[in-house]
Image 1 (cartoon, rainbow, N blue to C red):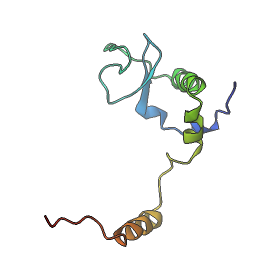
Image 2 (image 1 turned 180 degrees about the horizontal axis):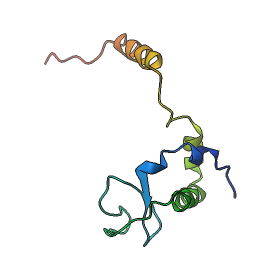
Image 3 (image 1 turned 45 degrees about the vertical axis):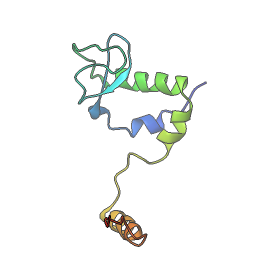
Length: 97
């Protein structure tokens, strides 16, 4: 089963790294691999990270639909303001207790 790589191309790959031991993709901010616990040097090569993501999507096809949504694109200031205004009309949280 092959998936187009276009959603993976939109990901901020500079925020990811690949474990050389188990090939799982990790966030750069983590000091050790969340799968195997490796805490040595990680692979930061974009091709390796893309392959790790591709393997992850092949193992869990549901992720492909999540990646296809434009989740990783930044909203404009106008979109953020409109979202805030829509949220404020709902009444917010009642802090009286």
